[in-house]
Length: 392
Image 1 (cartoon, one colour):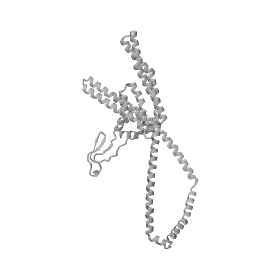
Image 2 (image 1 turned 180 degrees about the vertical axis):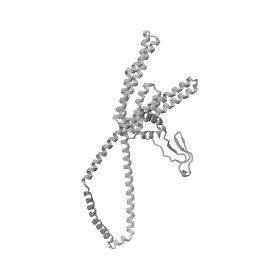
Image 3 (image 1 turned 135 degrees about the vertical axis):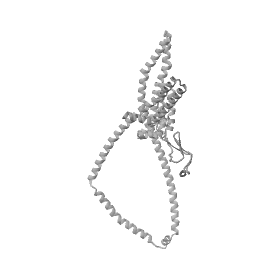
Image 4 (image 1 turned 180 degrees about the horizontal axis):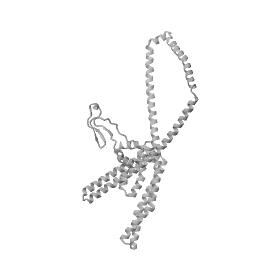
């Protein structure tokens, strides 16, 4: 992952800009507010003789005013700038990754060709040696030694016959080619131009529809994350008000766990989207690809989710913006795969995976404890239902 930062000047420049904007300026502004500005301001108010209540109100006002005047505009600017920088990083990393893969394929192909040439050369030498041995032992070779030339005469006869039949065939081919009318070529060119214009309009319309659908999908999914994150806290408060402390604690933990997995899926999906869009994969194929590999993507987005949830509010935003390019590059390099499975008897689904406990009579030869491909877990089903409800 870091090899791209070292070798590419573009990625190195964008990483430095992300670190400068998100690390030094944005996170540094929050630390400056909490560590220097507010403590100094409170100390000055206490020295002047303000009461504790007045000091708390003044501290609250300074905090909100600083965030409204400086932090919020900086957040909006960093959001736009980070989006452009992330796109540049993803494009450059994808180009370098594709180039390295092509170079590996070329070197592997060259190596295989060399091995194939050596093998063919060895086989050819063996065949020539065997043919020489057979010719020495054949009666034709003995006839040649005695002065018989029947085989070359036969060969010349067949060669002359082939040359005589070759010219009429070529003349027929040239006459058939010259007999094609020019208006058919013009009609074919016109049809080709009309088809190309129709395909261009269709591709533009499909791209616009795809972008609208994609934006609505992300909006609905973020709303779902927000509702699920707050729903556990709300149910916990209701259970606590009804004097059920155990149920309140359990509901709070369940809400936190659901929100954690939703955030993991969101971070993983956004990280891989740059790669999928550059590969030309449509949205329904992305969702299917994601739902078939939910355990992998849950683990992929877990480190970034932990960083965001542990840190305070605005500092977590800066940490996310600072570390997200690393996950983009890691997503470009990653190839989550699964093993294809057959619908055999004796399979049991546990945690989204198919395990073969015992093999049927038709599959006794295969391994009975082999891990099969993961099932498609519909994690985006609720999002799609809500999206269809919004559209209709």
